Amino acid sequence: QVQLVESGGGLVQPGGSLRLSCAASGRIFSIRTMAWYRQAPGKERELVASTTTGTSPRYADSVKGRFTISRDNAKNMVSLQMNSLEPEDTAVYYCYCTNVMSATAFAYWGQGTQVSVSS
Image (cartoon, rainbow, N blue to C red; front, top):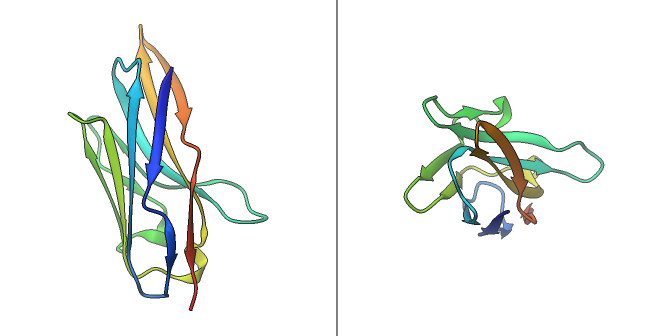
């Protein structure tokens, strides 16, 4: 099992910034993908940004140019720097990773952290 613990959510005014962090621990073999998803009330969970070993980071169109995902492989951590936040960014943000064991990838989710953008 792999545990993901998120931190850094909160309330911020429009135009402000927040930084989310996620640390993976447990039976880690090889983490291939680390990502951030979000789910707003009444909406489906959506991919915000992801980073996969050997590839370039991916971003949802709605956050391109505002959000930056970064990863520390030595610490099994992923962060999401969110700038120029908009009320539409309000959601619960979930950390996600895939842990590869014997050529099989297992997916794990964090418990989520609330991000609220409001004046």
